[in-house]
Image 1 (cartoon, rainbow, N blue to C red):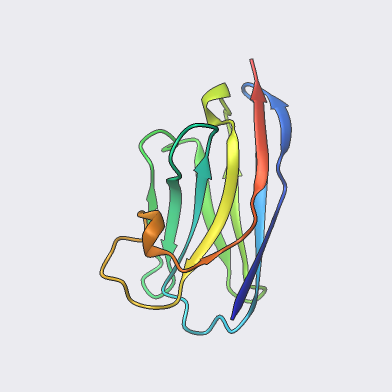
Image 2: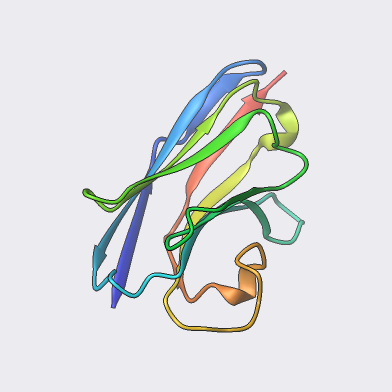
Length: 126
C-alpha cells in the first residue's frame, strides 16, 4: 500500500507563489507515474501535472504551462509542485496521486491513478 500526504496549500493573492509537497510512503518501488490533480467546487477533477518515473517525462495542463513546475525527489520520495504567477482560477483542492498498476490510460487522466492523498486547499484571491 502507498500512503500520500500533501502539504503546502494556503491562501495567497494573485501573482503569488506556493509550493506543494507530497510525501509518499509504503511500497513505492513499482510507481509508474506521479501527478498533481485539482478539483474546484462544482467541477470535475483535472490533471495539473504528471511525471513518469522511468523516463522522467513531465506533462502539464495547458492552463498551467510556464507557471507550474513538477519535480520529484527520488531519494526522499517527495513530489513537489512549484506554482508561480497564481491566478484566482487556480483555486481548488490539490491532490497528489500515483499509479502503481498498468491501466492503459495516460497519467493525465484521474481514473488512471490508483493511489490518492487527501488533498491540500489552495485559495487565490484577486
